[in-house]
Figure (spheres, rainbow, N blue to C red):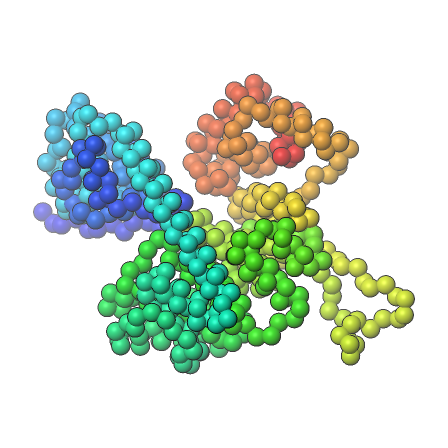
Length: 517
């Protein structure tokens, strides 16, 4: 019999907000009684899913530990091949009551396809395995957050030293257990910290730095490579000096990209050339936020350019942008206040943009706009956010600084609507028309009473569904869930609210209430 061809796992949606769990950690939980009986020992688990379907392929995202008792198992070879094609990480097979032992044909198929196969004893419920995986993921997530927080504090403290650039590089090398080098576009070393990599890896790192150096148009913002077991990364810094941060580490851990992103922001600020007073104040505000200041404390440094617009953006091709690509988007929008998020989240970039701007008229010798004595300065005009090729944008309406959290929520809703309707940009429109005739306090009180039976998840689903005119498919796209999940949630909303969602009057009242949140 010919060896089966190895299917290529498809590209999947972004993983959960937690690091993957090594299969070995789950097997080490003795109370579960799991035993690996086929396939490789190494696998990373992102999810747990239970299915007794003959072909669960359409319902898998990739990275799952699939649990099954083999109720509809008829062709083990085809079954395992489909699991590998879907990107499943491992298969857990429960013995009894369907099978007294794991079928030999299934064991052989898992060995052929390289899929880890776990024997689940009768006394271990599948739900217990799922709980164990989520517990391990929560623990890993907490470890990563603590590590990133400690690294952020250490880097921010280093940035406040008299010799900030070498201090930041030293802390970065310490946090990543590797080599951190600041290079010019020609590969000349400006500062370095950490143990030197082997000569061949060091030369490869210099070549990688030249790839991202901003001396020529179209250079990527970052690049990675591996040389002889050494992981290499290069990040172009902002500030117009064509400097590159290069990293060489023996291993890559979850959170490394976030730590490197913090260092890129700090080094870009520290190595930047002379800035105008406004830019310098905003850089100071960003650094103070990194040091733990509250938004209210840095508000005076942000200047009188408010109100502010919040923009949520994602790459149209579904890729996750790195910190430097996100920074380029912010620069094109006219703001350095950019949050690139995490490398394993949904890829959303957030930009905080001054919502007003003036044209740049000719200036006098004193740097002021020339105008007649007594002539008032031109008032700021509303800034229009244009579409950006390669990005999908959700934009809030201009908002005062204290209400930025609400604007952030509205921008997220606008982005979900843009993706669901396949439009490059959606602006969250303010409540107007008849709704403006009602006292805001009364409207909010009515909304809280009407929507009290709904959980936040159900309320978000109902809001999205109504905004998309009851489209199941578009709502599923916007929320990144299956259309059947949308149907179940909307049905649950109708039950809890005791209303007929086919009634336009009901939909109108609910939409009005949901807009008051």
